[in-house]
Image (cartoon, rainbow, N blue to C red; front, top):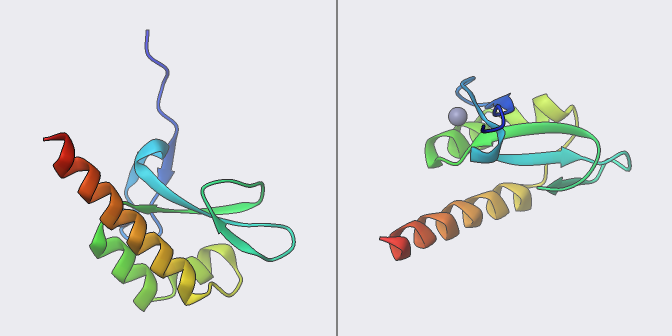
Amino acid sequence: MSARPILRRCVSCRQLLDRRLLLRVIRLPAKQVVLDEGMGRSAYLCASRECLEEARRRKKLQRALRCQVADSIHTALQQRLEESRAAASEAR
Ligand SMILES: [Zn+2]
């Protein structure tokens, strides 16, 4: 018996996906924005370049989190995508 996936909506394409497939950005109570871990308002993004570009261009994360999101967050997300892509090609 497998656990039911927890679905979350990508801020860019609005698709509902398994939370484990999404990148998570969290606004901590101190208004700091972090990736992956933490308690606070969360925004989710597909692990795709298109959704990241869209989020960056249209300030989707800012809107979802209702605060400023530094460009370094977008850069970190982009790095994450490239790392996961590299890992996927190594697995092949
Ligand atoms: Zn998406």
